Amino acid sequence: MRLQTRYFVLSLGLSLIVLAVVAFQISRGVGRQIDAHAEKDLHRLVEVARFTALRAPHLDDALADELADATNVRVTFIDMEGFVLGDSWLDEEGLSRAENHGSRPEVIAAFKTGFGADKRSSATVHEPFTYVARRVDIPGRKPVVVRCAIPSNEIHLETEAVTRLVFVTALVAIGLAVALSASAASSMARVVRSLTVTANRMASGDLSVRSGLRGTDELSELGRALDKLATELSSAMEGLRSETDLLTGLLEGMQEGVLVTDRDGNLQLFNRALREMLLIGTDAIGRPISLAVDKAELRPLFDDARKKGSSVAELDLPGIKPRRVLVHASKLLGSRGGEVAVFFDVTEVRRLESLRRDFVANVSHELRTPVTAVRSAAETLRDAIDADPRSAVRFIDMIERNAARLQACIDDLLFLSRIEAKQYNFNQDQVDPGAIAMPVLALFRERAEARNVRLAIDASPRHPRVWCDPRALEQILTNLVENAIKYCPDSTVTVRTRVLEGRTRIEVSDTGPGIGPKQLPRIFERFYRVDPGRSRDQGGTGLGLAIVKHLVEALGGQIAVESELGRGTSFLIDLPAVPAVIPSPTASSVRPLEA
Image 1 (cartoon, helix red, strand yellow):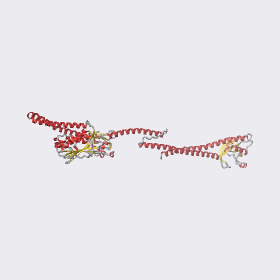
Image 2 (spheres, rainbow, N blue to C red):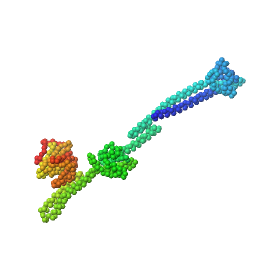
Image 3 (cartoon, one colour):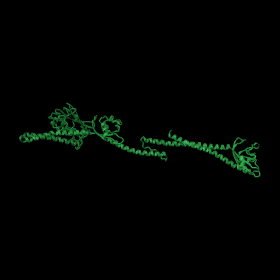
């Protein structure tokens, strides 16, 4: 049963019970009150009749009729022998036939005590009466009794009328009670429904809703309590939301991966960095760590963290992008339990450490040879400078040559370090690559002829221009052309320029022996040589291509290499192009340097 129905039934039941009790008591009281008032009226009327009889010259039926008309009650005169002297309800014939009233209780009591009363039915008129009698002592005559009576049915009719009025009033009151109960129940139910809707909206997360109740009753107090609760919850939720947003922002902004499990070993939380490291999706939440993450080494790590409080391990993560991570796992304190693990990507650190070791080894190896040659030549020179002056000159040349080699290696290392440290000052300008390539190729003309290398330039007819530093572009082309001439005798070296979408491509290609697929990924590493023996014979430092790569990237460009064994190698450089392009009046083609 709904609250409104229960409240209505309860209030209606109480109203009906109260009204029934009141109506019953009123009906009983009204009957008694009417009887009592009737008897009092009879007492007063019989006194009036007695005083009238005392002054009347004689008592007869006419006097009884006159008193009855005046008092509207039945009046009877009875002598001491019980004969009826006069009766307002009897005519002369009926009076002659009237029975003796000497045995009537009220008459007997009146003659004895002066007053008598009785209720009974009349012998002649079958109708109940209420009688009140008084003895009348008339001087000089025998005492008589004057009796007044009213029909009991009049009292009953009046009682029934009053009772009907009471019950009609009760029915009206019941109707009003029903209406008021229904209205009160409906009003209360409406308030309760409003509070229920408000509470449900608060429970669903809408803490801006308010009950709007302003009364002083209990439901209004409940509404205000809900409003206060919503305000406090909204403030608490705002604080939690801010903390959650802050925590989420911190977790998502971290480069380190974070993973949290519960006390049962189920995955509870992880951030973007870990998702990229372990390639796991959001469906892994709630799953055991052994099923969510395909890495067997993590389970012992978490077990150690649970037993010892913390654990550290370094793992290799295979995949499309292999990584090496350092994992710190710790036990979570508090009732929540579980573990938290932080994954540090140390791939680059380990790579840099490897590069540092390789660099130190390569530098040591590169410097050891000229240093050893210089020391050997110096020691030999000390002994031969006097004994063999001609040999001394040869050793001096050896010292100078290796010193120059050392100087070139040190200069290249310093130049490369300046580029990496962004200490090299670039003067960006609109540059025509063809105008830079021409003097570079002219610089190596004699060396190319000595190695039977043909130099050519293939410039685009649109004369593309690039944004770059002319000195840097000249250094790039110099290193590439010099390498091509050194390692590709009996070939053709060509510098090409092409216009791409928003970029200009500069290509330095040769028709030499080419580079193998295994060597191509390492071609830009410091001191890396495809043929170490031949490279040292040519006097290279092994840093030229590394310098080229860093210069191109510092200019905002990209460099790539394409090669095929037996067919040559091409270095492709893309640099930002100048938007405005001036068409050339004549088409260009591959031209030898002499042209």
